[in-house]
Length: 119
Image 1 (spheres, helix red, strand yellow):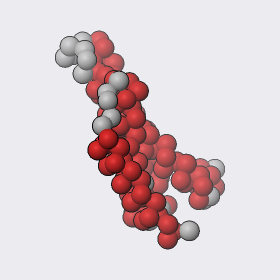
Image 2 (cartoon, helix red, strand yellow; image 1 turned 90 degrees about the horizontal axis):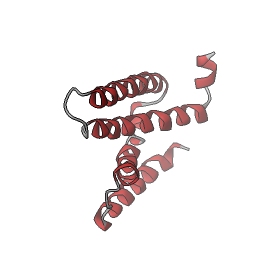
Image 3 (cartoon, one colour; image 1 turned 45 degrees about the horizontal axis):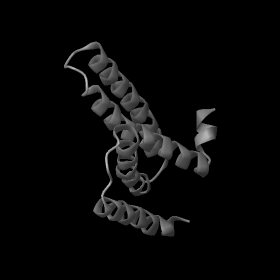
Image 4 (cartoon, one colour; image 1 turned 135 degrees about the vertical axis):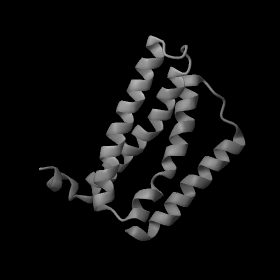
């Protein structure tokens, strides 16, 4: 059943987005845990949550690597850096500077240009 689901290209790309969101969220969850004293309940909760998220990411990523060319899969990982900026602004109210916005735009343009010949 999973093989039939992943045989469709759009489902693979959706799984890639889910995997990238998981990867970016793991860093955010670890930073949330860092706000608690070392080995406190809050720290351990967020650490375990990050490990769980990374386990889901690892399974999704392995499924992708079995079905997509390596370059196709890794081109989408640039989105991770963009999402980390979004999570930083949403969860930690960090200011995003203009040069960071330019950097994110460069990443997105690079992804679009490198993926344009895939279709």
